[in-house]
Amino acid sequence: MIPACLSFPDAEDWARMQPFQIIFNPTSAAELAKLPRDLQLHILGQFRGLPQELQREDSHFGSLARNGRTLIRYRLGEYRLYFERHVLGIVVHRILSKNTVRDFLFRSNLPTGEDEQLQDNPKFWELIESAK
Image (cartoon, rainbow, N blue to C red; front, top):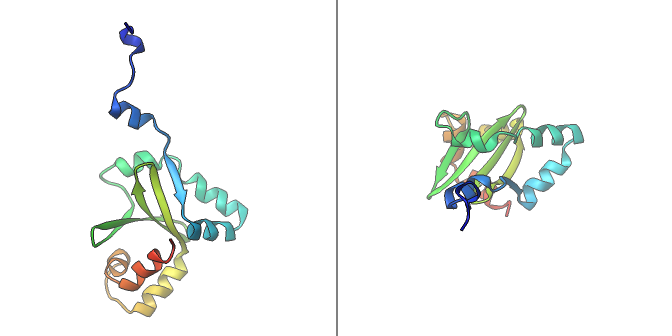
């Protein structure tokens, strides 16, 4: 018999103990690799605390939804990171310069907010899908 203080964790406790993984797809990994080393380290450092931040209701992340799929936008200085939740953590799809997103929005000529513009534009989703 195992003493109570040495009992095994249940499934919920086990899930909380699992490491939170940040998975970069090939496109986002290439985009990260193109950035200066100090900026790469800064971006990676910003992922500390992300698991807890994603659990909060008042999170400062943007959200884009289409056809049952939800992307999360993380504004990080001059960059925008687009990712999805994954059972192991998150999958980063794109790392785009803010100016690149602005250029995309300007070319799209849409009058609403950034997230709404992207969410409703099929070309944005094509950009995300091309990252696979």
